Length: 144
Image 1 (cartoon, rainbow, N blue to C red):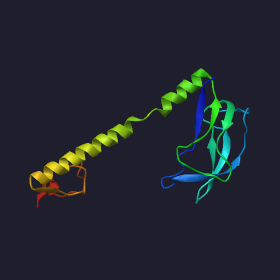
Image 2 (image 1 turned 180 degrees about the vertical axis):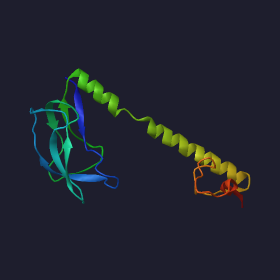
Image 3 (image 1 turned 60 degrees about the vertical axis):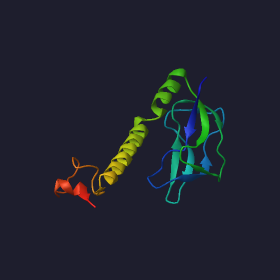
Image 4 (image 1 turned 180 degrees about the horizontal axis):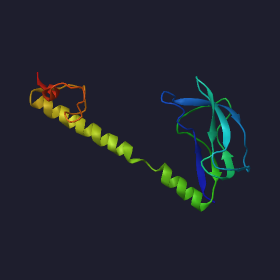
């Protein structure tokens, strides 16, 4: 049977890690999708980590009182082929990361060309087209 990883979820915008305070299952236990199996503590609250799909717990690799970063593998669930395939589709790298990198590359190229042309880009908006604060459109490319 395929194994699906149990990952430390994103627990909040500013939370980078969490400490394991309780493990509610052991290897061989049957679980359902979204069942709380591990309690983790951040500096703000105690929250539950849930299973990604139904199946049988293969192993829990996390240790009590240990701290793990977001995205760490805490254990594995033995799942059906269909559940594993569905999880694989959901967990593939999202295009947002690639899109974000492309945006950053374009912004760097724009900034370099602006400097070469003697203009300074004001960082109040992404572009003239996105300007929503009512200032003149030319304020984005003021001469230095």
